[in-house]
Image (cartoon, rainbow, N blue to C red; front, side, top):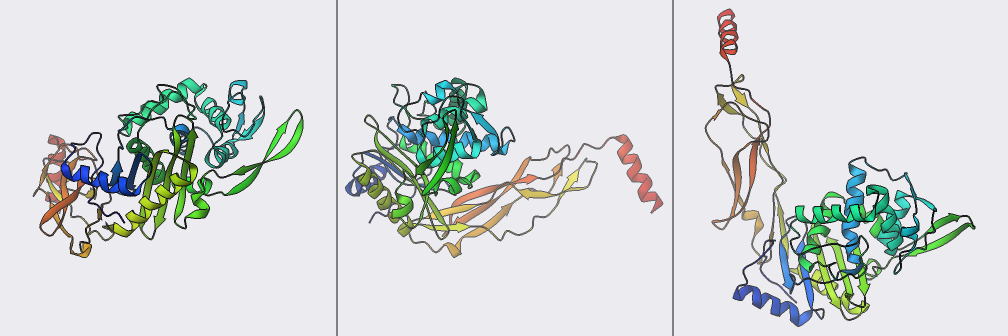
Length: 385
């Protein structure tokens, strides 16, 4: 079983002898030529194998498509109950599909199920057009979002994963977009874990049922599986971004270029089991209340503070995480003006005398600089007291 030291996610890494050794360990147990295992809450890369080589991703592309759909839902641009009208272009998509017909109408939620469960290319294009007006504009948005997520080796040409020369990504980049989807849109599990479900086609020919069957067999084969997306073309080989959760540990295993469907799932299980066996997760769920800091030259004398983010840490070396220590680093006072969200300090975490991370501390209110009139009013109030 693999147990390796964690590596933090980065756009590019300096390959050390230790990293090369880790890849050799992975290669011994994973048949696919490209693989990566990531812990979701921290983004820590636990294992990797040729994870930065640009490859055709096939339908794993649809993770970005689903991410943009769920972001549009969150922003109120679309609703699950909205009606989507299928264009002739969307209906013409080959490959994996649910055989939508031109001018057929389905809800956004049904389209999302068709994408997440049946990997439907026609539903992807219909949703791209519904959100952005055209698939081309939607793909531009996909590439912009990829840049924002640090997916430096990714370029999308379409929204469904059909093979095109320039449509490329990496195992690492797939893990990055998978993590974003899982962290910020956990409702995706409601769709990715559907095993079988029927939809209703209503066209000029009448209404009839069509069965959706999940392409991700891990949903039935692996007890901790929670998603996420498979892919296959003759060029890309067999791919999967497999998510799983055991207790408080959530992992993503990306497999690319597998020789067959069975081996890609076995490779994913190998990585996930190894990760669950090695990982311990620390979450600081019991933070102390922060003090208010004195402010000089402001319209108020103190300002409240807030933690910028939660903190979590993954260990794979068996360390006793109950020994993690916290230390506040704050100035004695602040000078106005202060803008809400300004970083003024941090809480530092250490284990066995080694810093393992920190979280910034922010000003939670804006404080304007005091003017002559403010000082005068303050003096009057003091006099009246």
